[in-house]
Length: 243
Image: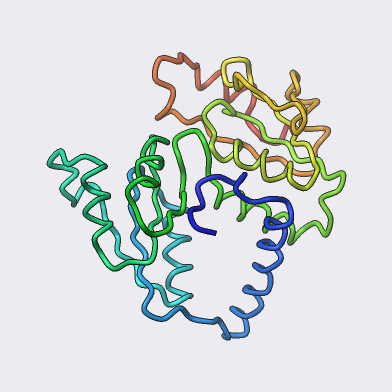
């Protein structure tokens, strides 16, 4: 596979093979027998803040022997007003083997696909997609559950702005399973694929019909003109001892 921008680039068989292979890699890691990549270079271009995703990628690259070239926007010519097009064109001239991009704008990935000659990995695209997070989530679930058949997973919270939820719903759907969803009306997505989701109008009903709950944070950085009373939201929808 070349670019990995969206979880839907993988069919069900490919997705399951990736998850299965991750267990093989995990065993090799604990046996200190990981196959290393020699002379491979990977650019990191994170245009949004990241702790978990970026650190996970860095650790994975370290384990695999991959050199990381970290292009920080605040320390690059982008601070001077250089466009994303010019930045990517410059990076395209270097002898590297791939790039990991995170951006608030999905259009940046379309621009990157048109410019770059090496593979692109999506580490978070606006509110659209986060495919590598879905792989991680499915791997974690596979450690706990041998079979996803009939598994009731619920995602609750800010569904409208969550790329994590958007990608997970599609990924879990490839196992033939529906994801349970709940959000208050102001966080409900405008479009829902009812073939792969069950939407609940009642928070407690959703939680009661769950084997696994994924609670989403409110993405304050994406709310713009949406007026939300955060204290009221927490009092009604926080996962706590009541549940």
